[in-house]
Amino acid sequence: MTTDTAVAPTRTPVKETPFTHSILEVLDQLRKSGPMQTIVFPPYPELLRRLQEALAEEEPDLNEVSRIASSDVAMSMALMKAANSPLYAVGQPVQTIGQAMNILGLDNTAAVMTGFLAQRAVKISSAQLARFWERATKRAVAMAFMARKMPGMSTDIAYTFGLFSHIGIAVMAQSIKGYTGTLVEALARIDRSFVETENANHRTDHAVVGALVARTWRMHPQVVASIRLHHDLSSLGDSMIDSEVQTLLAAGLVADQLMREHEGIASDADWVKYSQPALDWLQISLDDLAHWRDELNELLASI
Image 1 (tube, rainbow, N blue to C red):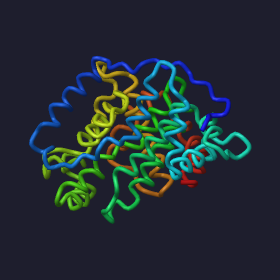
Image 2: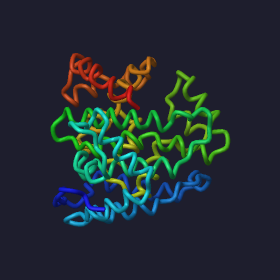
Image 3: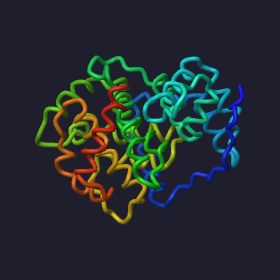
Image 4: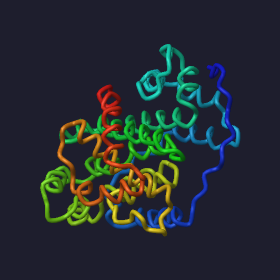
């Protein structure tokens, strides 16, 4: 299937910075450590490998991307649904894969496809996590929404980080006996953080496991690093950390808060402690946040 009038853009190769390289090196070492031997990591999806190879070319093969998208009816539907959503819709409803790719753009098309493949690869069996992918999608949409408000922030990287930031929770729930009990404990305790409770019980946490999933699936280094650090918000403002990673961390905190407000859930400890540093880093005010909340509610309600 062709992509109608889509033209393949020239892409800049993904490069690791010294900071992201150091994160990846540490993750590779942790993957060999004791706690990780009990965790079953979801296999790297073959269609995702093909998609990433098609995108890695200096001039990406749009026909190959379209073939991958069209190889699965449900994935095709997911792309058209995304293109017709309030976040991207521009007029007449999208009716073909080619039209969807043109509306979304190549990077956002890849992000939606990656999310679809992730949901297929990581099945949720725990009743406590029944809404896991719904909430992950809401977080991803909130991140993409914010990226469109802030010049220089990549929409597809923001979406992917939002979708995968808590993937480690789903993977640990599948692999570690007693982890669902840890979830209940971690949410209830006020004397220590969520990840501190995970580490006390299992010698690792969902930020590490999630980053390893993203590393195994060859995601953008900024996404991997941000997943690893998304509960280490004291790092905001650290000159040693890439500014793009800090922006993802700050935006992720704001996205979580906007999602909580939409669902009528109280703010978490991270927001109470780090909201001002996050807003300062993003250079947005509480008034900006109020306007974004009103706009975002329609998008989140559609999920």
